[in-house]
Length: 204
Image 1: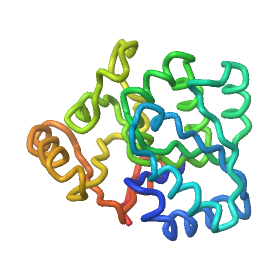
Image 2 (image 1 turned 90 degrees about the vertical axis):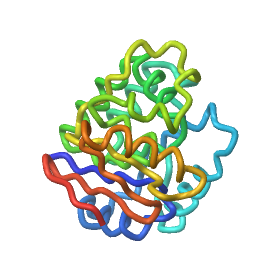
Image 3 (image 1 turned 60 degrees about the horizontal axis):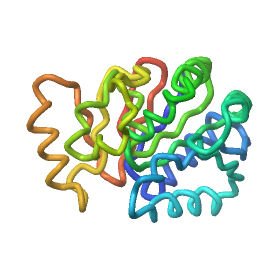
């Protein structure tokens, strides 16, 4: 059974996340935290906000930047983590770095096998079948080695984070207008989250 928590902003949904973690993880306090998507962003304050929010609730974070860590250590860290959290940033760069070391395949496997997954913004979007729809919000040129936009395909919808939230109001509306008739978009603002249990999901 896969259990997934998708959010626009960890700090904005921390109480909902902690409630679910307490229910599902029964006291586990270690989280593998992957901030890699922020490597190419000018502003990364949301990453610190998320880390601080989790730590304030007593969670211990093991940091892993997959772009600057060797393959074996990445594989070991992912395989041993009871909870994995991938924070926001550039979706295309994040997927590029996952695919560069074939970590997308490992991540798919361990989430399917029951590892609790937290995805913030970019970390949520990569679970969709394809991430091309997010080109309007994120700069795909920051991932020059990304050969295709195929995501992890772990969910049957397309998360649309930061819905009507600055500074993404215009870009999110453009995505919604362009793709709403062709893709199963699920918009969430910075205080909403999508909880996935196997093949069903709810918005909280």
